[in-house]
Length: 73
Image 1 (cartoon, rainbow, N blue to C red):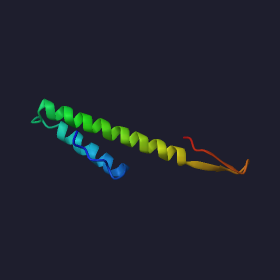
Image 2: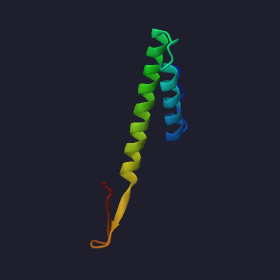
Image 3: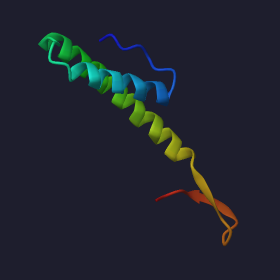
Image 4: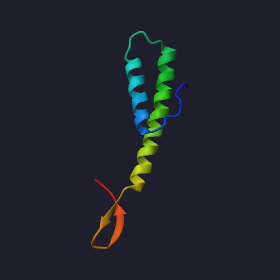
């Protein structure tokens, strides 16, 4: 794998978009496509982990109980 650790969520998304564009090209070899797929899978895991962290941090104030509760859509 050649993907460096992303600096943040946004850079991981940008790297994923670049990988998708590169994989959509007809000139890519099977081996290169596999490497890019593996890099992409690593980036997706990173993004999922970051989103989970943020979800855990999101809280809303419940005025009735005067406390914080989990945010849900």
